[in-house]
Each structure stands twice: as structure tokens, then as C-alpha cells.
Image 1 (tube, one colour):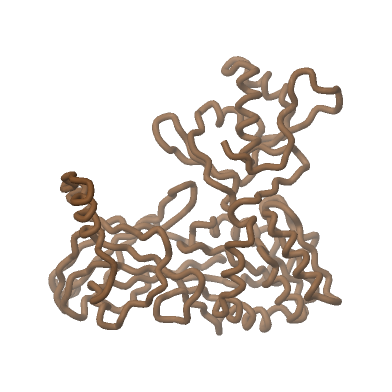
Image 2: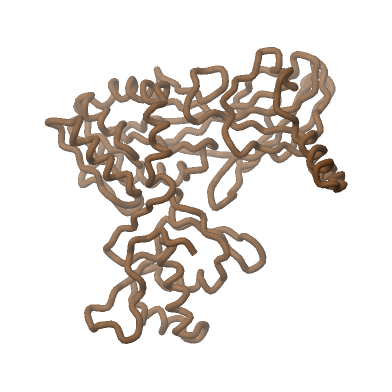
Length: 416
């Protein structure tokens, strides 16, 4: 396994005597089934994905739900696991950040710990300027907190807007850059940056304004709902403000482009020819679904490709989030043509005056949008209704929205 931790290994037999180390399970670890008797996990939403965990790993993980020594865990699990196996499994959990030395923080150097994903955020002028406008309206004279400060730019904007004080938390190694950013740009405003997971930290006082930007390409995939709920309950003063306070999910159906990369079906046919194989079964199995491209789309579709208007699927109020496990979105067809793609994006509602859209018809952001492509286009005519089934699910140990079904209803739905 790849070592994403800078913590020492579990003590081994014959090690010098000293106070026994206590270990604890990572409090924000996420697990999901990944096959028969196999699990996948993340130590947190910012950490790398870990696969091929066995039920025995979960038994050892559970033994450290409260801080405990290795000897205590070996005793607790004695009837189920050999003590040597407990130590070996504990080593593997520790290496992957799922187990921690009590009173020490983990440092992730992969993922969001590197500068690579942060520079596009800083260079995203639409994002930074929208946040700056809203922060300038709400930070002056207020106690402010930022959840996951990354490179520190939003914390700096809050301090320079006239915040009374700013407290922030960041779990990855990018915190060192954030602290240097704050030192270089803030003078006269007390700013504290805590190192660790937001679930384990809190300011020493309630704050009036809680700033966050933990949206992924899919707005849910960085664990926004749980993280905001925890911080809102523990950090925010009664009547305090979330910034952003909500976000909306949108979809639009498109026809084929005049100049575009080969469709999924054409790519399958090309591979069949290249390899000399009959890939018909693969093409048949793929016909009914949409495939999301692995990277965000950044080339806006031409107006002629839009077979429907953009339709809002739902809005999530972060003060009281209610996300349906499933919902059906109806998109009225306004011109003839086959549906080949569905684009999905989200709008961030910073406050009552400023909304930041990540969609294809707004100024480009670093997020781009999700492009779902269909192998077998759906024939439609103006006046039909395109029904899109969306499911809120857990994939790769993270939350996400996926297209679970689609159909064309002949004629307007209301006319049936």
C-alpha cells in the first residue's frame, strides 16, 4: 500500500520501553462495500482512495473507536484475531491514515495537499471575484471561520475586508502555503489556522460568518453536506451566516455537434476494428445509459445543439439540507433532434445578491461541467418531454449524483 502518513509505525516487540502509544480511528473515515468481503475507504474526503480492505481491517478499526493502546485492542479482539494479525492490520490502517496516533495530526501530501489543484482555483477569476464580493458585504466587523482554507486566499479576503478575526482549518500540507499567504497579505487582524480535520477542531468562540468552498465537479463529492452540518452546529453563532448558503443542480439535453469527437458508440466500433474483436455485446449493454466523461468539459455547446432549455433539478439549502435519493427531472423538447449528451452543473448561491454559476453559459470556472454521453441517441421531436432520473448515491466512498435512467415521452407531459 502507498504510505500517505508521516506517523510512526505501531510499536514492535523489543522496542525501547516508554509510555505506550495510544491510537484512535480516523473520525471522518468513510467506508463502503467494494465486492464480496472487500471494502474501500477514505480517511477523509480529501485523502486518497484505499481498496482491498477486509472485514478484519474493520474489526481492528472499530477496536480503536476510543483511543486505546495496541495491547488493549489485541486483548479486545483476542477471541477473533491473533494478536500478531491485529498488529499487522493496524500497521496497514495506520499507513493509510485510517488509524492515527492519539494527539497527533495526519498530514496528507497527495490530493489537495499538493499545489496542483489549488492554483486553478486561485486563477479562477469568476470564483474568486464572486466570493470576494459576498465576503466584502458580510465579513466587516464579524468573527469569521473558513472550512478547508486550502491556499488561504478566501481567509485573506475576509481579513482584508475588515473581519474582526478569522479562524480557519485545513487538513492537508497546503496549510504551510496558506500560512505564508496570510503572513504576506494580512496585517492587524488576528488570523489563526488550525491543522487537521474540521470534525476535530473548532474556534474558541462562535463565529458570525462561516465561509466554505468544498465543491467538486460533482457538488457533493467532497462531502459538503456532512462537513457543513458539523461546522454549522459547532462553530456558527445563532443567526450566523453560511457563505455560500445554498447551491442548485442543473441539466440540459443536447443534440450532436457538427464537429465533435467520435461518440462512444463510434469509439467502440473503432476499437472492434483495431483489435479484430466483436464488441457488439459491449455496445448492446451500453445502449440504454449515459456515460460521464472522466474529465470536466470546458467547450460550451453551440445554441443549435440545445434541444431543451436548462432545467433546475433541485436546490440544496445548507442551513437545512434535504437531498432526495431519487428524483425525475422533466425537460421539454423545443426542437427536433436526437439526444446525444446531457450536461450537468451547479450554481453556488453565495448570498442574496451573488450567484456563481459553473455552467456552460456563464463565465468559465475551473470546475467546468459534467458531460454525460449516450451511446444510442434518443430520437425526439419538438413538443416531446425528456425525463431524466437522477439518483443521489455513494460511489468511490463519496457522495455524487448520477443519471439512473432516461426516456422520451411523446408529447407534453401535461397533455397526456
